[in-house]
Image (cartoon, rainbow, N blue to C red; front, side, top):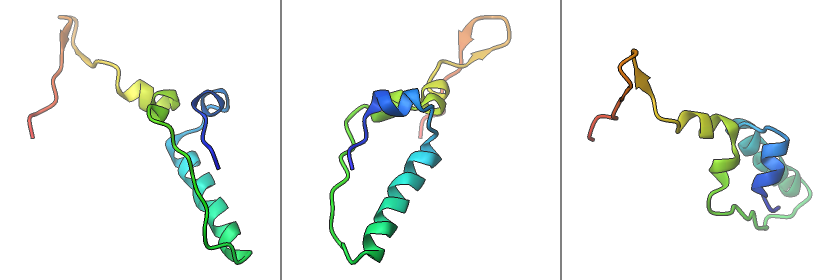
Length: 73
């Protein structure tokens, strides 16, 4: 299985849907006695997942235009 960012974006897949698709494929292969395989996940794939891209946008507080910062941890 090869995950391609542009295809995932066109299908507007959520992260949960991507994980479910991978898990379903692994389960189908295991049921067929194929206990091996490869899943190619390209670097930067998450940039094509709309929910992840939306969550990475800067968050603004009130009308002052100041960017909120995440707490140091």
